[in-house]
Image: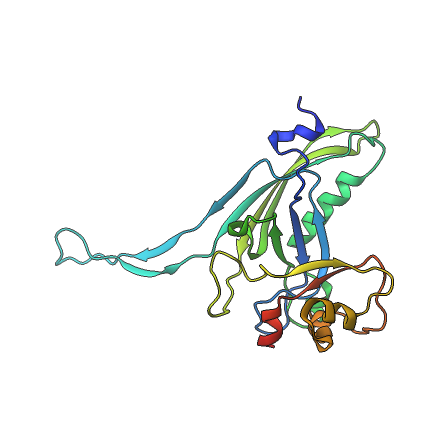
Length: 243
């Protein structure tokens, strides 16, 4: 059996993959809402499958002997399947694996905020892995399949392999590099003592007025109450210009 650090050859890379789980947007926006959770991978994926299709339509015509000319209907959104390996065998009495699986399952559950806004939806997610831009796009989770493969003495699972299926939510942003994804220039910042939305906006954009965009992207109602340790999504500078 491979050691924890050598699962599937992925190991503990210096650049760790993450899955940012967001509230769905309100209205007709194609930009995810506030950050719910950043799912950090214990190990980088050993397998990652991407697919892209183009849809064509052929209408049979009796008068054409060799077949009708197909008609291009448009490209279909990307799909991606991730393998997520979870292992807490070093702490056999803990419930870390259970909590992480629950976080993945929650991606298939309607959020309370979307219900309150009368636009019920599951979370929107963005997978990121360093410079792997082809795999970075806004998506929804269509399915999560989990296989528990090791259990502690109390019956609690301490090892699991998950298959997470993502479907792209296409962005309507014009003039964007199609290989970069809608959130290429976004960053995640962990709040430290002394931070404020204005100071973050000044450091990130050179304009303190950009604090409103940060507040909106993270669903912050009271900008004066910024808790230390909270992770904030910092929108791309282009998004400030668009808004």
